[in-house]
Amino acid sequence: MSFQLILFYLLAAIVLYGAVRTVTAKNPVHAALHLVLTFCVSAMIWMLMQAEFLGITLVVVYVGAVMVLFLFVVMM
Image 1 (cartoon, rainbow, N blue to C red):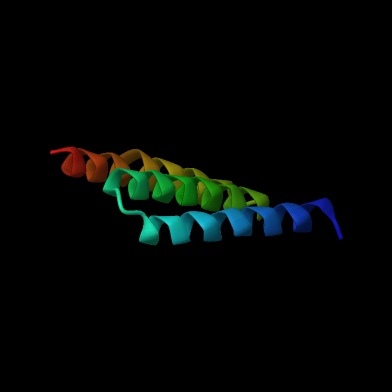
Image 2: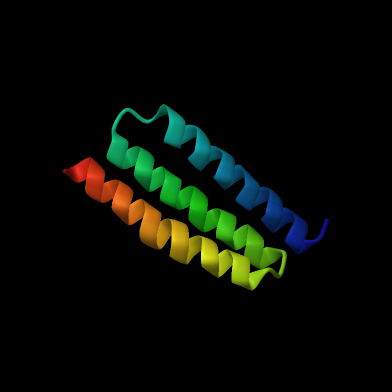
């Protein structure tokens, strides 16, 4: 097995963990933070597939904008 394949499986396991914890978290702030983890690791998978623009766009748009607004609404 190559290093990229091992890294892909490791990142996929982290994405699954973050997604499950997002759905099952009782605290909405913890759910949002697990969603941020899921987005960031998904961006790493995009980077692994050499789609840098999509990975950076995922981080900037979802983590930078959507999650900040979501946390702002939750904190209100």
